[in-house]
Structure formats: structure tokens, C-alpha cells
Amino acid sequence: MEQVGYDTYCKLLDEVVKEMQGQQVEKDEEERDIQIDLNLTSYIPDSYIENSSQKIEIYQNIALCTSEEDVQNIIDELLDRYGEMPKEVENLIQVARIKILCKQAHLIKLNQNKERAVFTFEGNDFNMEMVDNLMKKYKNKIKFSPAKDPYITYQLDITSGDKLVEEIKNMLADIVQYKGK
Image 1 (tube, rainbow, N blue to C red):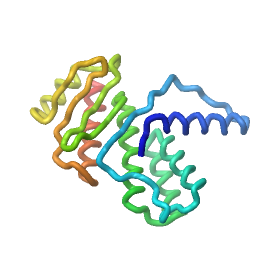
Image 2: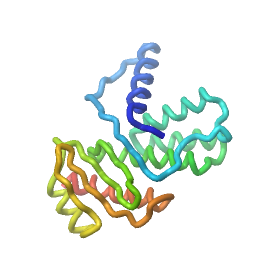
Image 3: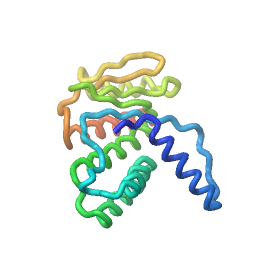
Image 4: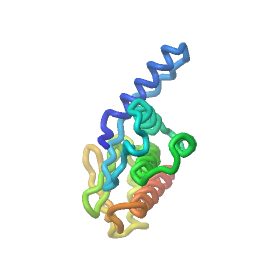
């Protein structure tokens, strides 16, 4: 699922609905979309949710998740309304979790190129001490590339499935941890 621009659309749609209902809408600082491209099949199949408006609502809710609590609420709703989730929907939920970690790490893009994952940072919010810590931990599995938007290339052990998701989430957790030091 192409993610560039969709999150912004969902956020704006949510703001318009709240304004129409007379609710106060907090304007966050400009939030950049995070592009995520992993070797995962992630979508809502017609066999799981047939109604297209319900499907759009679920996509919107997933795109607006900003915390694990939000993600868990979506999972509870899906299980309650539609039953056991197919693998494609579970992957979509995992992508939402990865996106939350990417925001915490100040990434603008995460993409997988076969057996490598590339973590691209916002250029003005980058910490060389984090890179040093990652290089100590991961040794020759990572390479750092300074650029306008610096990036780290990480050699993956697994290239698809649940273990890929866990490996990516573990790396992101380390980035977040070392970024805070």
C-alpha cells in the first residue's frame, strides 16, 4: 500500500470532521509523512471487510494511530466486528506499529531493498553518537551514509514475514534508545 500522502489525507479528513462537529482541533507542527516500503503484503481483503466505506474507515483509523494504545484499540475493534484477522491485515497493523517507531526515531523513510533496510533520517535532526552506538552493537551489519538526509543501511537476516517485522522493530527500538542518549 502506497503510504506517501495518505496519512496526511486521513489526518486532514479527521480534522474536518471534528471541526464540523464543533470540536476543538489542535494544530500540530507540520508533520511529515513517513514512507514505508517493506516486503510485506499489507491490505484489507474484500473477503474480510466487504463494505468499501467500512474498509476506508478502518484504513483511516490505522493511518491515524500514534501510539500502541491506538493500535490495540484498532485490533480490538477488528476482532470484535469482523473476527480473526487475515495475515494481510496483521501485516497492515505491524506497518502502523513500525510507523510509530519511525516517528519516534525521526525517520522520513524506511525501505527494504532485498536483504537490506534503509533508515533515512531528517537531516536537521541527526545524532552521530547514535550512529557510533549502533556501529558498536551491529558492527559490519550497518553502514552510515551522510547526506542532506542521512541514512543507515542495515543488513537484514530475514527478508519477509513476521521475523522481518521483528528485526525492523528491534533496530528501530535501538535507534530510538540511542537517539535519546
